[in-house]
Image (cartoon, rainbow, N blue to C red; front, side, top):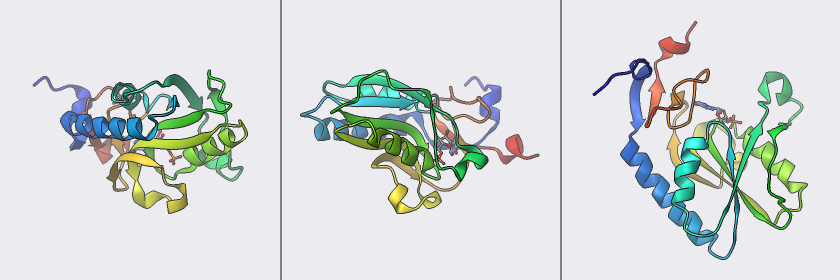
Length: 184
Ligand code: IMP
């Protein structure tokens, strides 16, 4: 196998391509059943969810509408203000629509919380969230995502869209990044 520099920075593989493929297919099937009488707007939160999104929509069997959104990171300072704002807003008119927000990972749960709050002002029919990964121990249960692929422990992971400093998104699996890569 060709070993790239990116792969040398990976401590261990958490989920292989095959495991992800199987779980995303299951999620797509589950969502297809839940939304069988609807045409949901499925919104990809850029950039981290992009790889998951393109697989998930192809596992979704039914009409749906594409959308891509980008939000500002709330960061430390903005945490207290309790808001994220759109860097790129929805293209679809959401009035009366079922919306599914597609995220890469839920950590503190604040991004999804703020997105749900923003959408509550838009007269949508419903909002649900789906994340590939759920850092289950890192947020209170009321900030949990509605659907997710895998529960993971509190560790920093990359690949399949997830990055560190913009890198590793193209790895086809999800891996734990070596601490030496981000330690001072
Ligand atoms: P939350 O608002 O704390 O739930 O943060 C969610 C965002 O933090 C995700 O969309 C990711 O961009 C980022 N994030 C959290 N944990 C990780 C990780 O382990 N690897 C890469 N990005 C992460």
